Image (cartoon, rainbow, N blue to C red; front, side):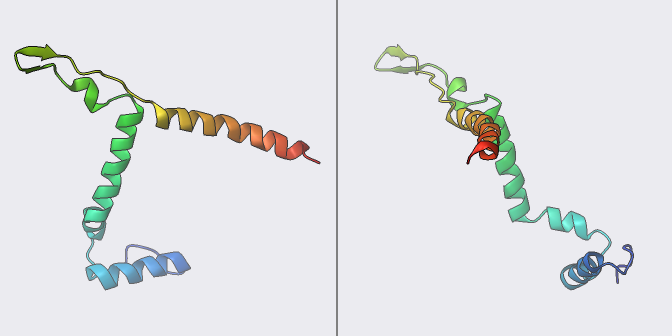
Length: 104
């Protein structure tokens, strides 16, 4: 059984119980926990969102192509909707708090 955490607090007792039930008290339980599929998917989704918000878009990497002997250059339009929404929300949040204080 795992005895690395000090017993006594409610949360540490719950964690020890979880480790013992799901991982048989193994000392490397954390490695197994973070390598579960749903955790990896969640982390990858966050990394994809960070990449998108930093300006990396697949359309910007798309090369020109030839069709019926003519070279076509794809339009590389990037809509920064998510970034605009984040900026708008963070700007209005401060204003909402300001106006909430002065509403009668």
